[in-house]
Length: 171
Image (cartoon, rainbow, N blue to C red):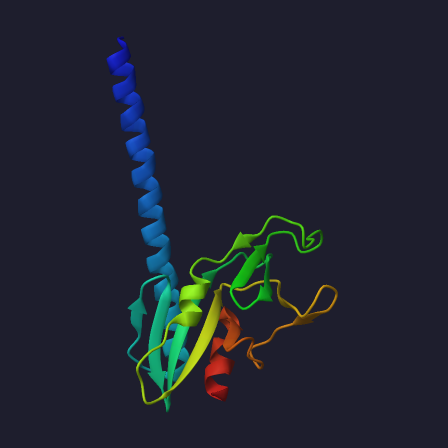
């Protein structure tokens, strides 16, 4: 076998791996969108849900326009909010320190800066699918608070997947 043949097989292998990764990402995002759509429609009935880039969806309910950021998380992990644009995932809530390397939620700044032209009140929601262990907000170096859907943080309401019905019925 010549060097050319070996390089050809290596390139074919990497092409297949990259193709599999792209397929998985696209499939995962579609599944996430479908799951969110079904949960919202079960909570408030048939409503037109529009997918937007960067795992965002929008829909109108009553006199409000909802802009929802979909966050896929392991239910055993924790979502940590240290400032308005810095949301990170803690994969081990028992041993996390502020010096730990963060796993950041992508496109948070774009979500917060997105403004929609509407006469209706715009409500920004971060929907965590399927859920998370805790949603923790750091107030300063030593104080934290647990976040629920009943209180907005920096203009965003954080809702676990299983709380979406309660949240939408209270709004």
